[in-house]
Length: 259
Image 1 (cartoon, rainbow, N blue to C red):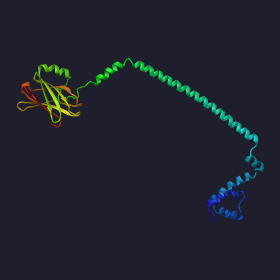
Image 2: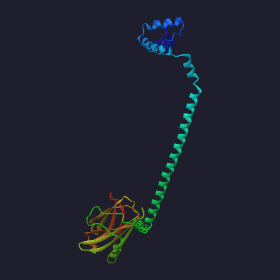
Image 3: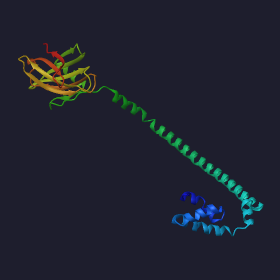
Image 4: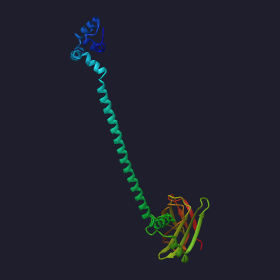
């Protein structure tokens, strides 16, 4: 027994009456019970009636068209190809003109910018040198009286004060404190060297009687040496030593205030 798929494959030949009688009977029996296949046969019957109107001459023309028809088709194709090549050449020329103009404009603009930038090169170099100069890498965050100061100012004031230095031999950290007697205490200038960037350095001034006066803290931004000013309420004569510690209280450098 044939399936619907097999019936549909043979449907065209059946509509044209080209099947063997036995196979045609089997298809007719199937179509009597299958509406889907029957509907497809109805559509094919319309095609079969149309094909019946085609003559042998029509078939010959389709399989072998007249010479003049072929010549006309070939000539049309040649004209289309020629026109396409001409359009491509015109488009390529236009693109070359556009690209050339763009390049010329870009080069001219770049040359103008280079000429305009030349006089400003000296100030730019000077600005770069200023940025490259060492800067103070700490800042105070605990006492309003502790403020950052440039190195020259501290060295100028050191003439009237005392300068004390110390080093941590285990770590290589070095520090210098310049103490100048002032109204209501002592003015201090502190410099650090070798302390890792990111360290919070705290200055503690220790008196002879054991009193401890926190004198400010700074965040180290570089290992380079930097100087800063601070103050302590302790008089100069009462100071026994200076301690620089980190945020956990670990000693960075201890400096004895030797008279």
